[in-house]
Structure formats: C-alpha cells, structure tokens
Length: 143
Image 1 (cartoon, helix red, strand yellow):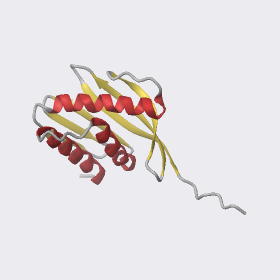
Image 2 (image 1 turned 120 degrees about the horizontal axis):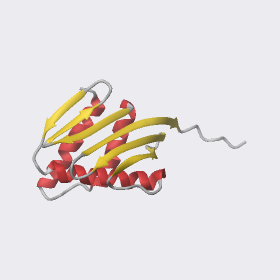
Image 3 (image 1 turned 135 degrees about the vertical axis):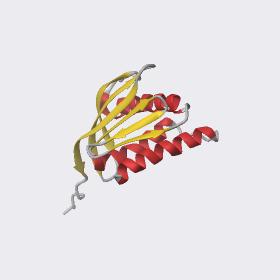
Image 4 (image 1 turned 180 degrees about the horizontal axis):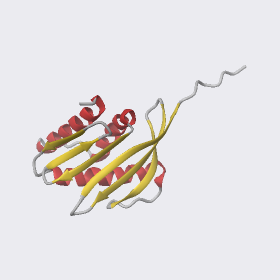
C-alpha cells in the first residue's frame, strides 16, 4: 500500500478510535493532518459504503470495514473539508457538497487543491485533487 494512502487510512482509524474513548480529534484537526498526505499522491477519493470506507488513488483501491459510528464521523469530516475550503480560498461553500478550489500551505510551498464532495444523508464521499504545487523560493538576499 502506498505510504500516503496507508497514512490516510490510519488517520481515519485514529480519529475513529478517539471518538470511542471520548477524546475526539476535532474534524478540522483531521483535515489539517490529512491534506499533507494527499500532496504526494496527487489525488484521493474516500467514500462511505455502509460501514465500509473505500480509499482510492490512481494506483490503489482499498476497502476497510468500520463500526457504525463511522457515518457521523465521515459526515463531520466532509463538513470540515467544506469549512477548510471556504477559509482557504474557495469563498462560500455548502457543507452538503460541491466542487471548490482552495490553497494549502504546508510550510514548504503552497498547493492548489480541488475538493469535490457530497455530504448528504444518502451519500458521503470526497475527492481531493492536487491542481498545482508551488515550492517556496529562496529568500531574496539584500545587497
């Protein structure tokens, strides 16, 4: 399994585990940890099917079975992704779905990402695609 996709899957598991021990990671913290993991793989789709989550990249397709609490967690993550996009360049975003571009700064550069998601009672899915990556330039030297 690709390291980045495996790390995204493990992040889901850690977040779900934190819900069961009442020290829940806030969905916005989840998003902040997940976005740097998307950059090296260029694109990831994560979708909910019953109690299973499907993680898909260009090279891999992994389905993991979870507990029923995954649905409420997944919906909160989709809403947090919408809020992140709104705060980082997309403007107004619906928590129920849409397609938005936003920027993510990991300290080494800025990445323009595209979020396409659905967060309704009947369907929960998100796809994040890296659109453009700009590395930080060396600082300008004063003469």
